[in-house]
Amino acid sequence: MDLLFYLSILLFVGIFSTLDINIDFDFWARLVVGKSFFQTGTLFPFEFQSFGKTHEFIDHEWGSSLIFYLVQNNFGDIGLYIFKTLIIFLTIFTVAKIIKLQDKNAKLNFLFFFFVLQSISYNIFSTIRCQTFSFLFFVIYLYILKKASLEKNFKILWTLPVLNIIWANLHGGFALGLILILLFALGEALNKNEYKNYLKTFFLTCATTLINPYGIKYIYFIFGALSLNRVHITEWQSAFFDNNYIYTMLKFKIFFFIVVAFFLFFIFKNIKKYGFKNYYLKIDKTKYLILLFTLLISLKSLRMHVFFSYALLAYCYIDFYQIFNKKLPKAIDLTKEIIIFILLLISFISHIFEYKFINKTYPSQYPIFCVEFIKENNIKGNIFTMFHTGSYVSYKLYPNNHIFMDGRYEEVYDNDLINQMGKVFLAQDYEKFFKFYHCDILILDKSYPIVEEIKKDKNWKLAFEDKYYALFLTKEKYQTKFKQPTKNLNYYNKSKFETKINWDIK
Image 1 (cartoon, rainbow, N blue to C red):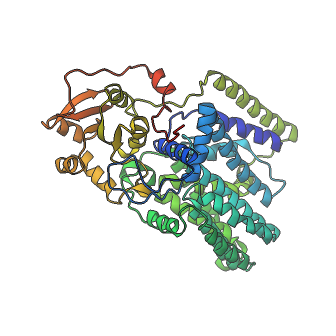
Image 2 (cartoon, one colour; image 1 turned 180 degrees about the horizontal axis):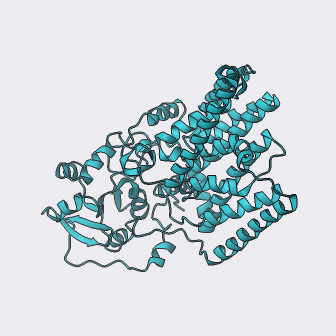
Image 3 (cartoon, rainbow, N blue to C red; image 1 turned 30 degrees about the vertical axis):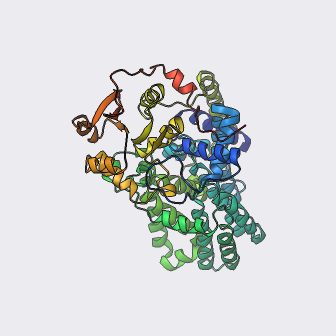
């Protein structure tokens, strides 16, 4: 039965991993770092693509960059798809193993997993990102910590400092792993269990964070990044308290409120039955500390929803399954699982048959026509564009063009730069800004107020526009005749990874 469940999950992940075929805005910068490292043998301590204010380049995702570049460069789009599928499957597989740790006879129900994963599908099945590694390591840490607690096998804790070396060099989310260890130490102390081994593991794991290309500077950077004001970054906003997202992420919100309501109901019911003191003595404090922590961070930002859902699935699956499970005869139960598997298999085969294994650059997301226009007409100069599209623009046009900034705002740029950029798009003090930073080319999203203002500005000329983006040039760069970019989307999708960034001097 477990094998059938895991195969069903693999098919499910395989199907849903194809539904989002976009490329993450920062993926292009990851490819540049990876390519530069393998061609030069070093990580550049500076940003060479930008004309904005930058500082020393502390790259907390450099390890992810190497992996992404190796996969893309050697296996292309199909390699990225398979890699994403395997990482997500391994994450869910580990969650299932945590459930089995608590009850080896627990029946793994696909439909229960399906509903939980659906609530965070926008996060886990989206285009592959560095945080995908943090999702995986988060549940691996949960597994190791829970195994040590249940089996009193504290030797396994010494794998965490080793794993931390890998996680800390893949993504800054490793800080969550350190918090998990502390929560286990506190929880086990409250449970009147052995907790000193967790504290020792915590300090040793903290020490292994220093094993990175930047040494102690990396630690300073992480603490600084955690305190940044990310008011302009969508994924760092609250789906519950930010007015822009009140009516979004509805699947997660419905799931969240149902789960919280059930928890509060059962806590109230048990306190009423046993009394607060007896109930407190009875419960697993570690479990509730982890659930409370992940719940709070999920309230704080969109990208944290996954951690709450995975923690809940890992630690509360048995509780909820006992409530909702309707015991069926073994033969009928097995038949049900086989039917689900067959339906998933048919869906997977039909979907994969039609899937072209091409990650796409959609005109609504990327200024592909504007970039091609600049390339075709060999227009050189500094380009100002949205920070989330800056990575793509630079990847395609460097070294002829430099960008103001891209999505690596915390790793490369001065802290206030993104706020300055935000004011420009709201058409505030843009004349002074463009003069100070000497901008030659503007690629602007037409939904922002700045576009209409620039159209009226005599210092700028509209050279090209499509449905979503407008391209402006200074009067000195403008010509009366330009070559026009092709409208063939297949061309852009097939040539998307072509770049002139190359350090191979052979």
